[in-house]
Image (cartoon, rainbow, N blue to C red; front, top):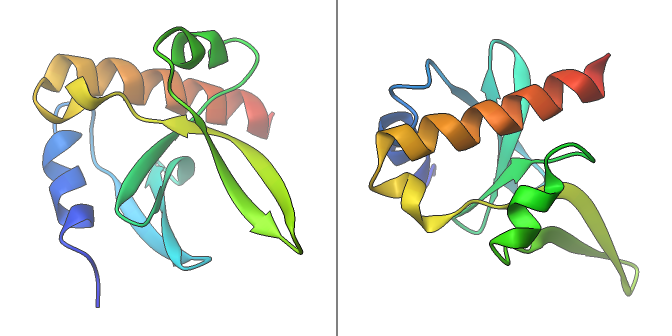
Length: 108
């Protein structure tokens, strides 16, 4: 059963544009124009970051997504989304664009 959080993200990112979700690793990948720019694990949103954008997340003390692989913590290039995106469509678009651009750079 899909969590209520995924349909809620469609509202959050309404101004940013159409998003789709795909089940993966017990969570969801969040896509825009076929590019994964976010992931959801345990109803928590993480946004794609790279060397160009990760300081935006670090400056806000947002932590990277980690998972346990054979007793070892694996960090991924996705960071916790800032809380303000849930109440402010402009903030949601701003952060979604940062994540989407990072995802595009990672693809090229």
